[in-house]
Length: 205
Length: 303
Image (cartoon, rainbow over all chains, first blue to last red; front, top):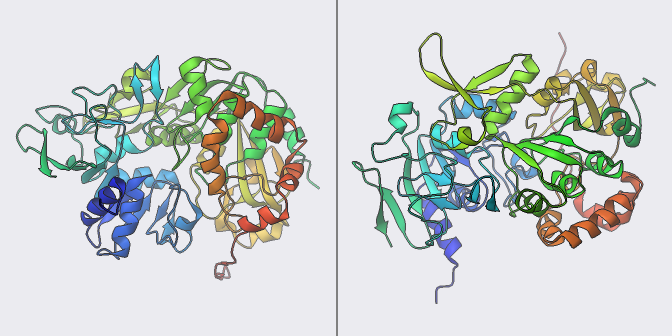
């Protein structure tokens, strides 16, 4: 038996993707752990930006929420959310965006809104938060989520955040600044995307 | 004393009416739970509750039957999971059906920006390729008159009242915040009325000695409430820490309707106000949340 959990394995794998000096938009949950791990290992110069407005964070405890007080203390800058979404995200300053979700389809489109019908939900999830604009604007997207037949369906119940959208990569038609999903890290393996069909392909087990 | 300083009971009684569009902003930091509790105690009804991140206090307001409609971008218990009160309302109509109107964070920020600027809408680059515009007809698209490129638009949001918690305020309502600022300034300027709730009342010259820190000027403020610990289990940087354990426990407390109702009976209806809420926790509990001493250096405003 391995002496680590599947979540810890995902976090460790995700952390390795982050390079020193990159600007990363940190989301709640496992990405939060991965970014803080990377900063304490190979990427001490990783610039962590949280959507709460804290820039260049050096949290000295693991923040439970992305608005934890330890993110403001000793950060480079604390700005309003107007600046986060307009100047940092829409302004093109984010190298890596991390996203999770309840479901992902083969084109990397993500559902974090609802399971079942939108108007008669089986499970109501939190919704987009900043995910939709992170998916559009970050130069590169890494996804971290647990894999199961339910979370990797043929068709997701709701597209909260666009990946490649479809087999012709409609991102280009819409003129999205970000290139789209690059990796999907699960407890089963690591997936990339085919450059011609924009479909997810298994890279590592 | 300026006529603006009043009790929470009076501020909510006078400035929040049934059917109002209300925003209690705060992105994790400075969320005014005390105002939400007073709204529940005064049995306000049919509110349109707006906020980027409705969390535990909106969960409680929904469970208490105060809310007709929720306008938001992320509804959850941050780092923990679901809001069960809200889910019961949306999934089962308990205690009443709550209508939802949802955006992304950028969408909500842009709505407050348009509202604060008294513009009819704001354009922004998001929402394309997402199903959100299919379910929310308020999200539309326009062509830029200069480049011909397509942008999403969202309508201005101008709430009837904004309730904003801050660290310190003077009696005119000049309010200072440090640490995470969220979208409080825009929510305040967008709203028809602003109620400021503060940890501390300070003389006007303390504000004037550091004017860069003033987020909201008294000239848009209708009422000032001085209520220490009003943001708990959220936090006030430099005053008390976020009560993370409370957020973790909330999942258990609120999981079923009986647990939620017991909480409201004991901690909201069962207490007259914030002072008693603070006392009920006791000195030892509060001591654990007390902020460390990390003062900022001062700057010279001289000329």
